[in-house]
Every structure is written in C-alpha cells, then in structure tokens.
Length: 369
Image: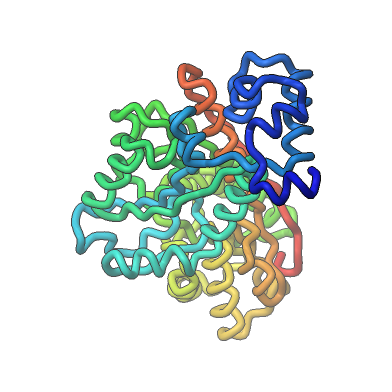
C-alpha cells in the first residue's frame, strides 16, 4: 500500500479490487464467504487484502451474510426460578470440578471458580479466534435465563450455541432443539435430543482406573463416585464396578460425592470408618481425589504405600495433590475445540446430520498410585 493510499484513509473494496485485478463485486463475494468463487480468484483477493491492509466492516458484512460472527457459550443449570441452582450439582457435563449452592450469583461464582470451565473456554477461544469469531458468555440457570438464551439465538445475536449443562435435568438442550436452533453440547444429554455433542468414553476411563489399581496388587478397593443423577458420574461408577466384577470383585464399597474437594473429604471419612483396611481408592474426579488424599494423610495413611489413589480428569488438582495424582485424562480443551468445529460445520451445512464425537480417555501415572 502506497503513502498516498494511507493518507486517503482506510483501504476500501475498490482498493482490493484494483490490487487483485477483479471487480468490486467479486471482492465482496470472497470477503463475505460466498462459496462458488474460483479458488485462484479467492487466493488473489486474499493476497490483495493482505497487501492493502483492508479490514471488512463487520456490521456491513452481517447485513449481507445475515451472520453475527459470534457464538454463544452457554453454561446451563436446571433451576426453575430466580432462587434456583441450589445444591451441589457439580459440573455435570464433564464430571470435573464444580459444586456450590445458592442462587444465580453463586451459580456464576461456581462457574468461574471451576477449572473445567476455564479449560472449555480455552478450547473454544483458541478455535474461534483464527476464524475472526468470538464467544459470547451466557448463563442459563433459571427458566427466565433459558428463555433469554433462546430469544437471543432466535434474534440472530449469535449464530449458534455451545452448551455446557451442569445437571441431568437441564431442559435447555430440549428447548434449543424444539426451536430448531444451531447448537452443540458438551457431553451426551441425559434425555435424547436431536443435537450434536462431544463426550468422553467415561466407562472406558473408569476401566483404566480399576485395572491400574488391581495391577498394583490392591485388593480392598473402594470408590468415591460422582453424583449419580449426572450422566458422567453414573457412567464412571458403572465402568468401574463392571471392570472390578470381571476381575472377581463383585462388591465395591461406594461413597457418593459431588465432584467437590469437600465432598471427597467427607466420602473418604465414611469409607475409612466403614472399611479401615482399604488399600485402594478410585475417585470419580480429581478434586474428590485431592480431598481423599488429604483425609488419608490426616489418618496416618501413606500414599501410595498404604492406600493407592486414582482420580479422573487430569485437571490442575492432579498436580496440586501430594503426591501428584495418578488420574484418567479427559482432553477438555480438545473436546471444546471439536464441539466448536461441529457447530461451525452445522452453520455451514444447516441440513447436515446430527452427530457425536466420543473422545478416548488416557491413564496418566504419577505418584499416588
């Protein structure tokens, strides 16, 4: 771009057209993502855009494409009114860290205090940013908030939604499906709805944990489950119990937790009181495993000498634990990126089929087992 062009103001479509040797209309079609343009011409226009420094006017572009170039990232609960979101539901979509109680304010605080949510945001932002798109954070923990999310999407303020549900009874996925809106879910919905989702093979992850404890020679094994009204919590317990049964252990003592460190501590206290000779613990997420390790040390049990401990998620809590936690890795950032890719593909092909992508877990061996 010449000094005369800079002094004349911001580069225009006409400047790009002259640099590319094509018409202004052709430049407009390329900039606005029209598909049926010759690839060689598209490349020439892109190079001209780079040379001239042209930046599309987002507002004008949205008038042409009827796209907002924004995606709603919705964290949704299962409450029914302003006083809802009570109880330790955990981050039900993933089974990773969460919990807390109270109304909408504490629901928001719970989300921001949750390392899982930060990992989801990282995956979403890293995928959208190179594509010139941005996430709009929304909370939907009450019936009114859910109505606002649906209205926001219907108005075209965002092109689609990435939904992270925190409870099995969350009605938002069904509302979005009924409205015919573009969306992708993090985790398989508890009630089948025609919406694409990404998830982890939770039962396979629990199998890895069981086999590792058995391989270490543990024989008096217990488990701290997640909340059993959350699909991830139920699946991890099922996978663990089934694997133990296949290896001749038909009864596994269970204490239900809520995916929080405090609930892990309480569950470990109960298990120790009822089964003082236990030598292995599988906790259905890392925060509960962290709480379990704290209680075991308080009771004078060495880890892993007296009791081996395995967690789930491979979150920041796994590295904060002492000793560092052996855990089943859930690749949250990659899952969030794939969720975003599925949504953009849905926007490009609205008539495409609903799909699912299931990620494989991986055992990460550290000092606790």
